[in-house]
Image (cartoon, rainbow, N blue to C red; front, side, top):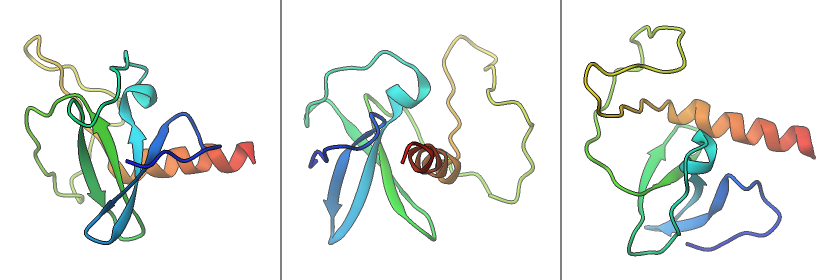
Amino acid sequence: LTFVPHVSPSVLGVLAISGEVHCILNLAKILGLKEAALSEVSHQFLIFRDKDAHYGVAVDRVDGVDFVNASIQFSQRTYLKPKNSEPLVVLDGSSLFSDIISAEELRA
């Protein structure tokens, strides 16, 4: 992970994987969660490949990943409450990345 100066606090840096450069986002900061200290050993990266960009998020742990058909109509709610006490996070990677880019453009 290479840190980049003068970017949003939501951006940790960039990561090169197989010749592609990915912007790595700080998911904890974006979601307003407590942040763990970043180390190569303790963090994993989820990589999103969109038609327009390649980016990823740093996470403390991943318990599972399920892919959802993009044509499914979702509720307008911004969160889902799971039936049990376990947390459930559903991410729209494209929206997450574009919202951060839009916020940065407004600051410029």
